[in-house]
Image (tube, rainbow, N blue to C red; front, side):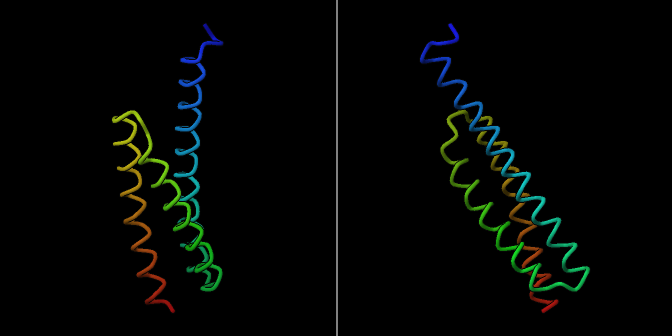
Length: 98
């Protein structure tokens, strides 16, 4: 059973979902790093890490759209929406700091 095409597809989908969740965590870490850089007054470094967070968010958003399981897709988009709010707050903070 472990070598059936269905098993291989299920395993690939599970690994893909884990990758997407990991990338969501990475995006969150970038935003946390942005906050630290701003607090330290390192605005150029903050801007660079914010760009990385935005790129990670775009990538995850594209991948989440292709998630076949609707419950997983809903979870991913809830997390993406939370991160989008944090990104918008970070952009605003950068504009007012710079």
